[in-house]
Image (cartoon, rainbow, N blue to C red; front, side, top):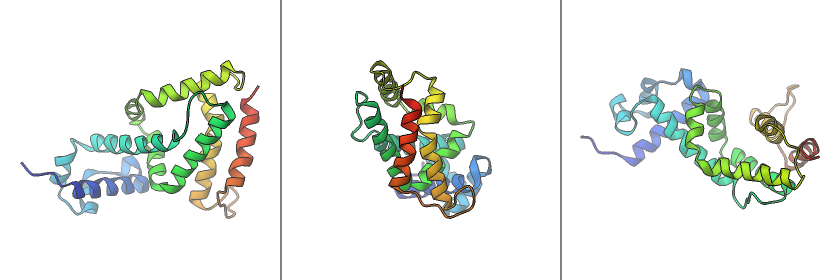
Length: 196
């Protein structure tokens, strides 16, 4: 039995993420990964059962890191505008610091593996978000909405601004750079849409 090499495993994961961001999950294969990581396909199977296992392990590690940053200094009992603003700032900080991770998680979100990935996110994420919304509704700081509508209004504008920033262009093709000023202007509009 061959020994595990942590450095080799790290390189395999890094190359896998890069390839998935560039080629999508459908364009990613263990053969291509082996070549990119400069290892034999058999080496990859020392660390991962199969392609799905590799992607899900990588998704969990990346998702855990994102959640750790998202919930930094956050408490579900916070005032709604204060708590949502903190989440925006934390999420933006994560996406700008780890753009490749953000693009990787976006690939996962639009893949057949999304449900399996979400099941690994843990109860803490769901419990925090549910408690935050329930507290805000109870205090009449938030309109009661289906979760999907809430999520679309509360976070999609932030992620779209970040996507424009990562591409370097706005919808009209002009140069776009994300800034705290633009983020806060957008945030204020989101608050107006969500509050009674």
